[in-house]
Amino acid sequence: MRALVTGATGFVGAAVARALIDAGWQVRVLVRNSSNRDNLRHLAVEPVAGDLGEVTELERALEGCAGLFHVAADYRLGAGDPRPLYRTNVEGTRNILTAARAAGVPRVVYTSSVATVGIPADGSPGVEATPVDIGNMIGHYKRSKFLAEEVARDAALAGLSVVIVNPSTPVGPGDIKPTPTGQLVLDAASGRMPAYVDTGLNIVHVDDVAAGHLLAFERGRAGERYILGGEDMTLQAILAQIAHLAGRKPPRIRLPYAAVLPIAYVAEAVAKVTGRSGRVTLEGVRMARKRMFFSSSKAVNELGYHWRPPVAAFEDALRWFGERGLLA
Image 1 (cartoon, helix red, strand yellow):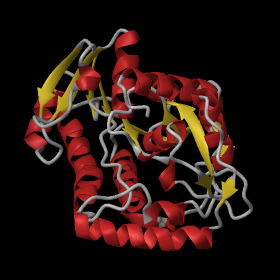
Image 2 (cartoon, one colour):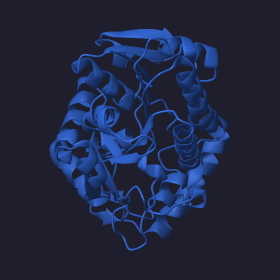
Image 3 (cartoon, rainbow, N blue to C red):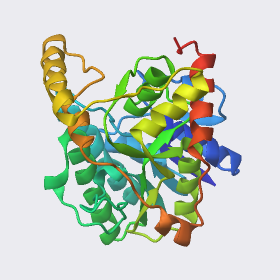
């Protein structure tokens, strides 16, 4: 069988492409001419030039495909110009699903994010059914993914077999940009994280997320969403584990939210002048006010999903970054 993977030059998309190849699929990947193709260098894939803004190109790319894995997304926090986020994440999703319907693709897995999942006020882990609306979305990245997921649900209601997956915080090899999470791993391993705030993330190996995509294709119910996560960890514990693996001392200074917020405002002002977003963004700091903990029990029960301990994800990420000379 043949599948089209969008976003395969990126972090999660490359992992999905690898998982499909290992499962015996013929893999076609949608790439832009300007894309960095390093993640595809050793993969037996069929590159097809195309853009999420061109429905005709997408229809051609989907010809003869038994599945579509729409992983492509613009994942940036604190973007100076938010319009590309909505163009890629919302309109791009609408275009590729329109093309999938026209091409007669029988099954689609759409990659959303836990950014669209509600977080209970009592501190318990969020689940797929936790109430949330667009007013709870902090920043343009989360808003764009929330709207894109609505597009995917509407397509399912209209008869397209779309399964939605919501990865938590993937870590591992192939984080080529890197993502904000990958940058955190790099900074912690390089001793550039002297302090932390009281927040938390759900850490999962990127290859487990990729395996979850295939399970969603095989066993997921159309129109349903499935959290593909791992283990809930405080930021302090995350940084301590990475520091231990890198042979460094973990940060011991805890910064209150009130101390970090002014730094974010200054960083945002600098970003507007320079046109480049820095490591500290208002969006990221505001998101950090809550511990972003989630449960993958639905994926476990319905899909047979499972994950490995976070330390394996950190080890693989550090090995990959180290091989490329990115660790200071």
